[in-house]
Image 1 (spheres, helix red, strand yellow):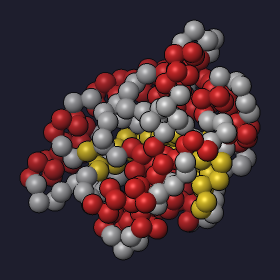
Image 2 (cartoon, rainbow, N blue to C red; image 1 turned 90 degrees about the vertical axis):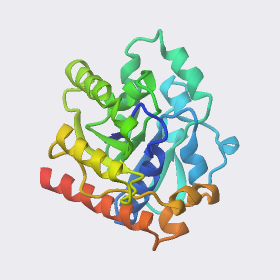
Image 3 (cartoon, rainbow, N blue to C red; image 1 turned 30 degrees about the horizontal axis):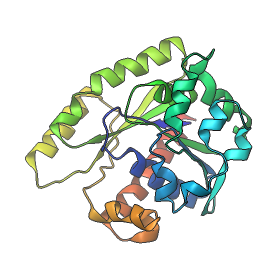
Length: 254
């Protein structure tokens, strides 16, 4: 299981989750996308109306329904979704006084262990209870990082949170890699940020860098993944390469 996390918003977490998931499913893997963000943008990006959802991850976390009742097909072979809606914000409040609240997602996902090859958890832009649930459920963290100077500011805090979760709640958790997003090779600052991250996370930055690409921004408004909307775009080629690199890293661990 892979948690896609960064407490800074607008760095490409959901874009990475949906398009990485899409390409992994295209490679023949069975993939589950778990939306832990109350914005519920994963469903929208996949062309799924949130008003049509019977159940969501919120009801699953509260123990009101079994996870199998809330998982829906995305309309793409091999790609399923455990969706979220804005009601998830209220779920986080309701869980505040619940015993073992940090492990709710992990326990909910256990029955699905044999169903999927990969589970991608799209975490919200915060380090609150919903993100902690994602980190506790995952075995690795993928960190999308925008190629701008201010994006570096929260890295130390995120790394500290990951270490705390690993020490107290999930010993198998590790940083799987940093994905540089919204890269503009014409800007000196973007190149400097990439080099700074290479120093901060040696051996962990992905070789694949996601470019700033308008087609990536347009695709969600059509309810489409980038390979459906414009498979020849730079963004599509980058996410295809990222999926292949992730699979190669997973294979090397075996």
